[in-house]
Length: 291
Image (cartoon, rainbow, N blue to C red; front, side, top):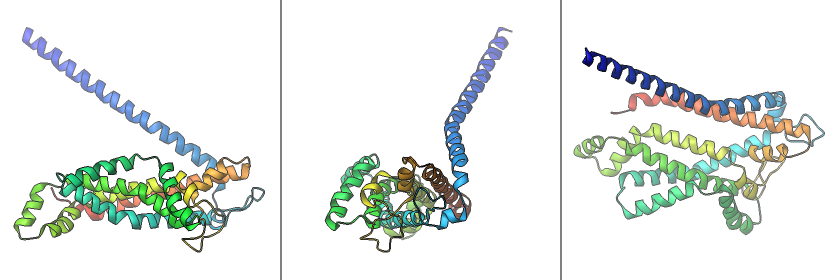
């Protein structure tokens, strides 16, 4: 009888602790989501009135004209992030492969440490560095300078996420490939990278999202413009984040409303990109995963 009572007591305590931990985890998740919901709701409520076809297709105007748009900043943002991706993706994936496949190398250890340092580097310092090296030497703010600054931000993210994605690929897959006579480089690019490409793509999306939301380095490298840039190397280039900063800190209600609208457009772009990766690329990658 005593044994049965003890067993019941232990079972009750276990159920109670399980329920308590579940409740605490749910509360933690809710507390993590609430700030995001408030931010998104605030941006939507304040930014929705600014959205229109003309807002997306017209160039910026003065604060006394309510029909100004952000077309050049959308193009400028895509241009600089695209150039930054062209620079950082090949280098970042290559570095990530090296970190993953040669983890005991001294060069890998040192480079990995420097990569982690660069990940947490203040973006203003990166912008200042590019300003000194490129903007001052060329005497021009430009989309190219902005792209170089953004590539410094994207590169360590891509390198580290690539390394982590490839590190979890089972070792027996590599061994089986090389046992069949494939050289190591072909095993890495044909088997390992293909198996871990979901994680690699996730890292690229995270890096693009981080770069798209940056303001400080673009203030020092690309500056701003109310027109389309026709030269990537000699003309200042507008971007959505810099426009949000300039308009959001202005005393004009028209510009402040447009800043909210630009913020909403930026969020929708990133949401669309993440959904594309999740539902389109995710389905195409599912059959290629290997245990």
